[in-house]
Image (cartoon, rainbow, N blue to C red; front, side, top):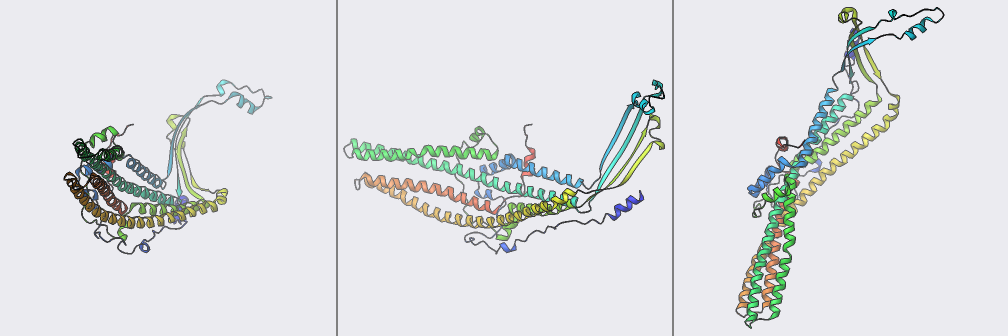
Length: 487
C-alpha cells in the first residue's frame, strides 16, 4: 500500500497537454463612437427599452413572452443540460467504485469430478462426497484515473465553455424574442391604424358619391362624375381586406411569441390601441460597449474556447491512461465466518492502458480539432464584423426613417388641406369634380404613406435596440421554471 501511495504522489505533478486558450481582444475592431451616431445620445442603451414606447399593454406582452415563449424554454433546457454536463465532467476527478454482494449455492458436477480420478480405478463418487456449498461474498472495488496528461481537465474546460456558450445563446435569444414581440405588437397596432385610415377614407368617399349623385339628379352634375367617385371608392374598399388579413397575421404572430393560442390572443388584442412611438433621441453608447454587451459575440467566443480546449483533449488520446486500482472484500462458505479476518481478501496496484491504434488516429483527430478551432475563430470574427455592420446600418436607417416621417407628416397635412379646399371650390362651382377626385386621391395616398412611415419608424427604432442587444439581465431563468408544462 505504501508503494501505491508514493506512486500517486509522484504522479500528482501532471502535465496538461495541448494549447492553452486565451480570449482574443476586440480592441482592433472598435474606434470609439459609431460612424452613424449623429442624432443619437451617447449614453448606454436602456435596459428596459420597450418601456420608452409608454404602452402598458406592450409591457405586459413582453413580460408574457419572457415567461411563456417556447423557444426560450427550449434554450433554457439546453442551458440546464450543459450545466449538468459540467457537473458530470467534474465528477470524473473522483474514483469510480462498485460494491458487490453475492450469495451463491454451489454443488460440483459428479461426472466432472469422476473424470478427474479416471475410470480404471473404479472410484465411485457418491452423493455424500458432493456436498452443497453456500458461498457468501461482499466486496468493494475502486479505480481512480490519474490526470497525468490533462484529459480530465480538458474535458471539464470543454464542458464549461459549452455551458457558457449555452448561457450566451439563451441571453441572445431573450433579447431577440423581446424585440420580435415588440415588433409584432407595433405591427399589429400599426396595421390597425392603417385599416382605420382606409375605412375613414372609404366613409369620406361614400359621402362624396352621395354628393355627386345628388348633384347629378339635380341637373348640376354628370354621370361621369358619379362613375369617377364610385371608382375611387371601389379602389379604397379593395385595400381593406388585405389590411384585415395583415391585422390577423400580426395578431397570431404575437400569439406565438407570447405562447398563447389564436383564440386567446384574439381576445387579448380585441381592443384597438394607438400606435406607440418613441419621440426622444435614442441612447446607443459606443462600439466597445456594444462588443462587450452582445451575447452572440460572447457565444461565439465561448465556442472558440471549447474548440481550442478540444485540441488538447484529442491530443491526450496519444498518451497512456494511468489508473490506480484497489479492492477489498470478504468471502466464506459459512455466513458466521463471513466477517472474520480469515475471510478478508484484497488487491491493489496501478493500471496503464495504451492503444496503438489510437496513435494511428492521433494525427487526424488533432488535425480535425485544429480545423474546427480555426473555423470557430472565423465565426467569432464574422460575428463581430456583422454586429458592427448591422448596428451602423440600423442607426442610419432609423435616422432616415425619422426624416421621412417628418416629410410625410407635412405632405399629409398639406394634402388634407388641399382636399378640403378642392371640395369647397367644387361645391361653389369654382372647379370641376376631377380636381376633387385628384385631391382626395392624393390625400388618401399621403395618409396611407404616413401610417406606413409611422410603423416603419417604430420598427426602425426596434431594430436599433435589437442590434445593440439592449435589454435586461437574464430574466427567462427566473420566469420560465414557474410554468406548468404537460407531462
